[in-house]
Image 1 (tube, rainbow, N blue to C red):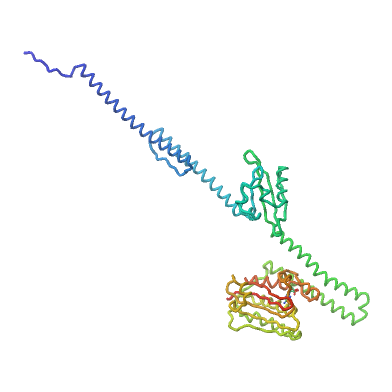
Image 2: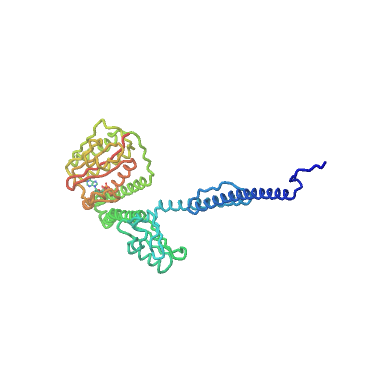
Length: 447
Ligand code: ADP
């Protein structure tokens, strides 16, 4: 019997070929799919990197790259992220330095201007435009000549431009402004630029003037009693000694001049001690009448002799005030003494009252003060001219009338009084009408 085997693929070359082909196709498909997958992932990562660089380019610094991928891509993205981080750190550091610099410029007391090669203002700080009486908007973009305005400042800049070296000068700009200007050329990129520094020396200059005036005043004040003393001594030397009554007269004059000199030196020492803070002010709650009564008692006899009515007007129920009693009695003393000195047969009234009972002009003066008691010394004397009134608290200031009448005094009493009141956080001021009398007011905080 012949067994006929069923035709089968096994062993058939065609079938083997088909199997190999289909396997290859399958493998190719798989490879293609895998390739597609990998290229998709790569494309995604490259897209992320592209988006990141675009964000960086548009100025957004806060960018991080998600850690993805393997091998080179991962290393690339890690390096890239590190680079971005480092870059961000440098930028943050630079930003902080720039902010610090601009804060310094904003708060600086000196004016700073930066101008380009033709002198056009590029930058100006607030002190700069304040000192020059302009604004940033009006200054930036305009020439230094337009911004500096003062001819000496402009000349200084032109000299700096021509000679190419730093220029410095102290210049009086207007009545109340004294500036030290320094203009320095410097190289910025390819061209020249200019740095202008303006220092306000007004206060220092004023202090210098005060010191100069002080020395000239003191020399002047000392000269008069010293010349008088010399005259007395010479008169005694040339014969007055042999005439006892005349000698006694001259000696009494000499005694008076020595008294004046002693008083001046004492007051000067006192003023200098108060000004330098070497006189301790010990504030304690004090009754108002304790500050007034003693000085007033002291002047009663003099007032009676000069036919001046001395009136005390102090309510009993006033609150206590913070005061150093000795020092404040010295103030009342000075004020009452002056009131008597500049009054002839009139009245001198010493009062104390609360702000609500104060006249309108006083209310205006004490508007921003903490609760205080107001003291006043009012006289019906010669008064003070409108010209003298703002100056009477200056050291050595005496009105012409006081000088020509030879009305004693050193011109230091009111300066001392004002210093003492200020050390009590109070105010001292005066109102006056020439020919009608004067009123001096001071305040002390209630305790
Ligand atoms: P002095 O000790 O020379 O009086 P003050 O400093 O006390 O110096 O006063 C300065 C000047 O103020 C006086 O020379 C005078 O011109 C003026 N003055 C002060 N008090 C009065 C007053 N009550 N009436 C008029 N003038 C006054």
